[in-house]
Length: 118
Image (cartoon, rainbow, N blue to C red; front, top):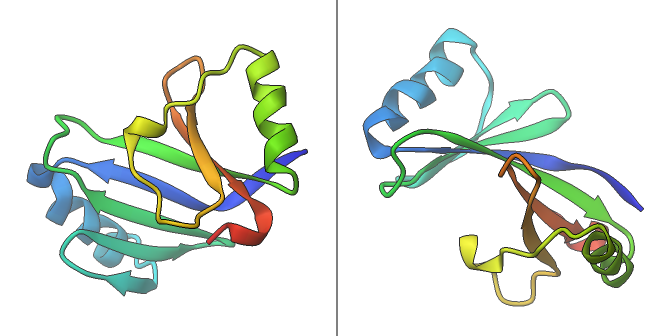
């Protein structure tokens, strides 16, 4: 029902953002895919690593994407396991088929419909 998605997001406080981007760009030398003032994405093997500037954070967080072919069944299965949605964590684009959860260690996961996963 679930499989690893393509995206890994590293949410980084503003005071660490430039140094973190430089680390992946200059030290590790990952190819840059996209860049703007708020985020940079790098090719990370078969994944896409996003470095997002988040002024309200005090320390970095890693967020993961999980995809499913059946979003409704996935939601029910997670609910049966006692996993609570946390959609207030970040607004998803209009029309995007997915939702946010946190694992027991408070790592955020985007649960996305495979055909709508970016």
